[in-house]
Image 1 (cartoon, rainbow, N blue to C red):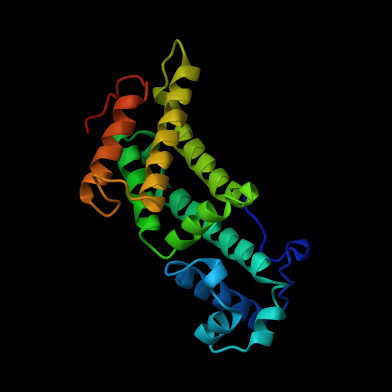
Image 2 (image 1 turned 45 degrees about the vertical axis):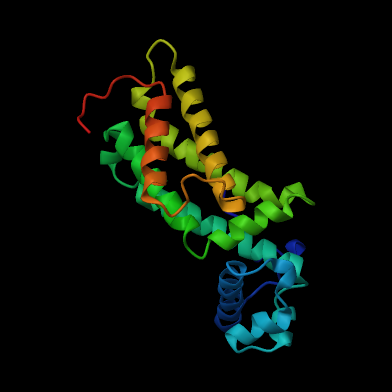
Length: 220
């Protein structure tokens, strides 16, 4: 599910030299930080380039416009999120870990990402999707990939007489999981806030209790 930030048709111009790639990456990193404070529409090219010590011309030599820039930032954020999740579940022991431990790590990693500089990209993607739903697709697909990772880890625990029911319960649990996080990011409805430790505990409990899996032979 890797996306390329150097695809010319996306409005991101190829960076062939190391110096050019570094400047492109610096601008993307600055964009992530600024998106934690304001919407992409409120970020000026001058502000963005000044944050890196570059000229406006540096921006336009690498991106056609702010739309293509945001898509590059979004792609980088998605790649980082998937890398963190995939790296977090490396090791054969995760295939034998109790489901609660798997869900606990998933919740911890996801909330840590949403409390990092990646949060602005997710929020902007949500806001922008109100006028262009395609801008949400990369984040949506990232969530689906995370669901697949968890399902693959737990497939040995699927109900023997109905494995489809087990997989569906995990994926719907993930849907509720992401829905709760989206509401917390956009509207903060409460009563538990995203940064509250109880959010992690309750999300882990929800996923563990909702999923239909064979009893684990391992202790939690």
